[in-house]
Every structure is written in structure tokens, then in C-alpha cells.
Image (cartoon, rainbow, N blue to C red; front, side):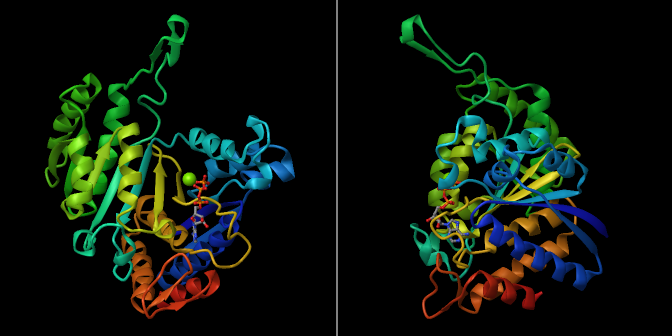
Length: 354
Ligand code: ATP
Ligand code: MG
């Protein structure tokens, strides 16, 4: 398979971990006889420094023409006092909009050997392996009008969704569930919100198209509790923008480490963008100690969701787990009696396994 991948290293440790992802993809290409070509472009602070804008046109054009995009991270103290149109984060928001990325997928997995790092009991998180599918472009964050009225005595936010917006995210979630254990939990607040009632109706309508998926509806308050008390009960969770924002941060503590969390942002039929959940980590940038796992696991998601290369994706995930099983870990993780390594050595170990 021939694919063109755009790399957007961005800033801070983004520049370091993106190299790790490229090394791993090269190993996969060699092992499975694929041809991946890479093109690197600027975004965020790096783009501000070079071109005076966080999202140059050349970057947008390259992404639109690519088969998929890998992004490191943007931001850093150097640009913190910039005016708002010259903030690195604008680059990220801009590219998400330009590619019409409406579905955010975050897999949360309790990696063996790291379970002790979770604030929850090991026996509760052991075996947890779930995927949160969050709607990214609608809902209360984008509703109009959002305003203060009556001399500031009344505030208004609006939660709006179109049928089409709900249908496309629900479809993505069903498809993701088909590729996993075939269990979908739709999270809403249908006992109170009109938008949730329509959400639930649409999930019920769509069920017939995906007879191999078992569907369950859970109210968001109950879901928040079950994520902590019984996380292994979940496979795929689909929910609207704000519920997804809250639940995905909540679920991320199951693993106890930011350096392991990957994400995918998908559009309808177009380009997908894959990035680690963590930021540019200015405190450790340039030291060669960043954990490349989240970025490498994001590359695995790219293979699975943009290229349908499931075996290749699984091999990468197995490689990361196997390296952790052997006791190797970066400074952000701790494995009792393990050995601490830097970004390059961690990457080499994963490449060697592949
Ligand atoms: P942003 O606003 O861009 O999301 P942030 O301030 O929320 O950034 P991060 O940049 O993700 O946070 O960093 C949070 C903490 O986690 C920092 O101490 C950072 O060093 C650490 N960290 C984040 N990612 C990694 C990684 N891949 N490896 C090691 N440590 C990391
Ligand atoms: Mg953050």
C-alpha cells in the first residue's frame, strides 16, 4: 500500500516524538511491504517564527492533499504573550476546522505494568480497554447565542445539533465498535435534554444497519460513575461534545499517564489527523526524555482508521506493551525494578520488536 503522510512536528517535545513515529512507520513499511512517504510542514509556534502565522496556507494545502496527518504538539512559553491571532493553539484549532474533523477518538487502555500508576485500584483498572468517540464540532460549545443579557443578570448558552451531525458521529462509533468487541454505549441525558432525546432516537434508528453491534444507552451522570467503578464494562462510548470532553479526561486517569494516550480526529471521507493527547511539555523539551508512546500509538490509530491496516496497528500496540512488559520505561512512567530509558532508546526498542 502506498500512502502519503504529512508530519506536523509543531513545538517542544512534538518535534522529538514525531521522529519516533516516523521510525516506527518505516519499520512497519519494511515489514509489511508498504510504501509510506513523508512530508514535513510547520504549525504552531514554529510556523509563527518562520512565517508569521500559526497555520500557513502551505501547511493547510499539504494536509488536504495527504492521505493522513500526524501532529506532535503546539505551544510553549516563548509565544505565551503573543496577541491572540499569533498563538500557537490557533494553528491546531485552524487545521481541525480546515479538515472538518468532527469525530475525536481516544482509546484508553490500562497497560499492564503501569496499572499501579492509576489513582484507582489495580484490580478495578486491570483489563480496561475502551474507546471514547466524542463529537467535536457541535453542541453547547458552538451554540448561538452565547451571551449575557439583562445587564449581565442572565447568561445564555445554547446546545444545538442537526440530525446530520448526530448521524455521522453515531455512524463512526458503530464502525469503530465493529472493529473492536462490538459493544457500543451511547451516553446522553435523555431524561432532561431535547438534544439527547434526538441523539437516542438516531442511535436506535442506526442499530438496524449494524446488527453485529450490541447497543446500550447510559445517562451521562451514571456513565461518569461507572467509568471509575467499573471501567472494564465499556468498549466503545459515543457521546456529544461537552459530555465527551469531560468523560475523556475522566477516563484518561485510568491509565495514570499522559505519555501513553493517543487520539484520532476524523472527517467524513477525508483526511484524518492523529496526535498524542499530551501537549508540548516545555519543561522537558530538548532533553531527550519525552515518552514517545502516545505519538507512536497515534500512528497506530492512523494505520487502523485511515488505512484500514489493522494487523499493522495491532503490531505497534503489541510492541509498546511488550517493551513495557520487559521493564523499560521513560521518566514519566515508573515500573518497579524496571530500567529508565530516553526517547530514542524507547523508540529503538519498539522498532526492534516490530
Ligand atoms: P497543553 O496546554 O499543550 O495541553 P499542558 O500544559 O496541558 O499542555 P503537557 O504539555 O501535556 O501539558 O504537559 C503536562 C505535564 O506532563 C508536563 O509536566 C510534561 O512534562 C508531562 N508530559 C506530557 N507529555 C509527556 C511525554 N510524552 N513524556 C513525558 N512527559 C510528558
Ligand atoms: Mg492540556
